[in-house]
Length: 332
Ligand code: TYM
Image (cartoon, rainbow, N blue to C red; front, side, top):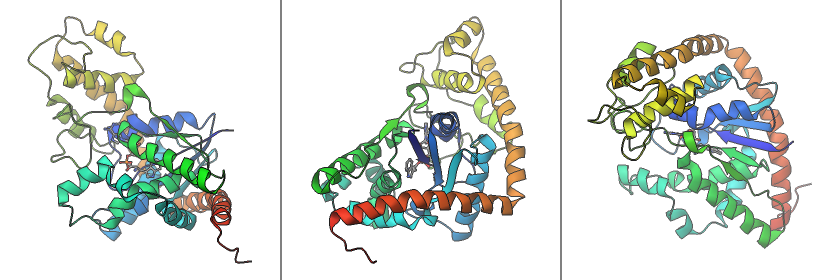
């Protein structure tokens, strides 16, 4: 079976709607037809400021949320990045074939380092995309389901795989980004031309899955729209309304054009209230399941231990071939 792999950073207590609709929802669907590897990149999470206790808690919470949305540990391999030392080892080799200029062109680094001042940014933030390439290439994967903001990192990953293969011999599979166009970029409710993000200046436009549905309903009610009254899907001219339509459509399974027909003659208030209702229906049972998983840390540990074992078997085979190709002597 072809392989699929993806990760979500433990940098917040809750996944947000962009994480879920842009990526994690696809992970659940893909486990039927793919051999799936889903992981929590805790090593990526230390590239920005962090608190160790909170990091540990968020790593558990992330695993609990993956299970709660339907990632099945029987079918999918679920693991924590730092449990797989081969990933960091592969990162070193890949960093030696990455150009400094090439890494400097990563827009996410430019954005994030500009925010804190380039001198305050750690070298880990700079080499972050190479660690991400190692995450993927260690597992010889076919598809990587992510949101639009990860596209450039996937391009770098492909370039590095091709470069390694042509310099040292064909070892690494060249992966493809799996990006579902309609949901690849969910927008901030207050600033509907910017992506929904946990690092936005305020969290007023951010919908966290684990927040009280009432709190999210309030945010949806105050979502920025436009000065017209007509409900239609027009991302260019009506980004706020179109974003709400996308969200409601994704969560309800009703196609956007059916929703648009339904809302003829109705107002933005109706669209907002019903979007909030659909969200509440989705998150209410989800919140309950997350609490249950969090109350059973021993079960989470078993899942992660099994996941690490399966994942290491794959990653260590890749690393062995890579080391052999670059001329490292075998220790045995
Ligand atoms: P992260 O943790 O920021 O986000 C997890 C996933 O959510 C997607 N996403 C969005 N999709 C649509 N609309 C949005 N507003 C939105 N915001 C976030 C992201 O594209 C991502 O798919 N570098 C990665 C984590 C990572 C990874 C990997 C992913 C590390 N190694 C290897 C895939 C493969 C990141 O920071 O995602």
